[in-house]
Image 1 (cartoon, each protein chain N blue to C red):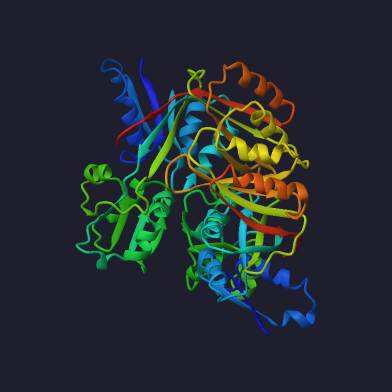
Image 2: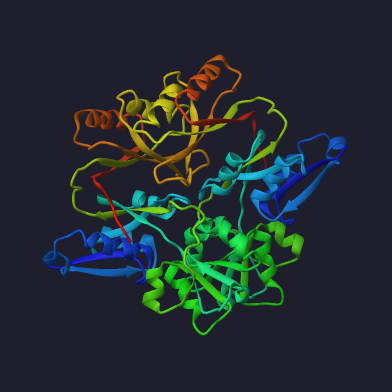
Length: 280
Length: 280
């Protein structure tokens, strides 16, 4: 039986690198059952799983420089039944790919908005007058380099090899410790583990946020992350995404979840899972 | 004595509309002392105030659809001494500007990433195969419309009038209640008011977030908003931006701030101020 894995494609993206790094942790006889299917957007990769077209999706959740990936959070909240199986942390090494022979020739730089943000200072310093053009993926950016010596793309060294494009500058990250956290999600129940992710929306009343946080804080439950996203209904109404450093099966977490339900509008539990550090 | 106001320009942006709406709330004899100075980025508008070049800056903080404006939060955290004088809530009415006579002619749509996100579903439905190109401001997007019938821009009806561009579709927001909150900041002490904004970074230890939230929650202090931004040092280290529904001079807030200092790495208080709802 084959396992279809949806990711933000095309081949050569960081999402594909994360997917392949995950597969390398599996036993050899299992890996060959996995088929990688690129999707044009993160939302479509997640929808493919929710609709049963794909078994798994590998999606970026947050980057250490640029922060949360809003589209992933908004989509996982909207869809029903997605459960996190595993988190992966991938080091991100952005490189400047170009057919130009020097930086002076470059007039336009293409990349996904996240790598453009991750290399903002480098770009301001070394390419202050170029036009920066965002693309849907780092690999889509590479398509603009064909037969053109005035364009450059920011992507991985792996993508440079895959598409046979010269690396003009090997490492252009603004901050050395650049990592992206990915979630591996499916419709199966999550396996349990060291982390639990959940989200809740609140009623639009004063103190709506204090009570849910008190429910967690008063039990000494460690939150490793809290992100807010607008409900899109009205300014000041949010969905809160929270990561807990515990398994949801623990009695104090169970109690907290029950109590949380009475102080919030909707609570969605995305499951408990372990975090796997991976090399690119 | 003139008052120099920095905003994300050029003239015709939503930031300028917010600035002008604020000025209309002032007495007539005071308004003429204000000089509006457009800056090419939000970061440069804030830096102008921090360096004493401008007296005030008007910057967007969050939108009801797209969420926080990361560049504003990151820059106000990095600079020293900026204090919020006033918050403004501006309704956002996005329109499609073009010299094309019908949607069929349009091949490319330009706008700032926030309006592109706010009209994403409309664009997918009515212009599914056009190229979407982000620009630094909604007005920069309008520059691409000159002598061209295959391009469109998303901007305000006000910008359409100002630059004499036809409105092809008057209202293309995905969600009806589209508002942006702006902050008016300067180096002066903030005036006090119904809201207080602060931010803190935490040490990278388990439970780093629980303790500061407990300090606020245990006193029943209402948080109307909590946003996290990465410290950019390491994945999992955050700066938390919190809005409280109270004036910082209240004794329980004073106590909380003192206690907060002992449970966090750096705390920055951006001041207490009122919120002004405005019409475009």
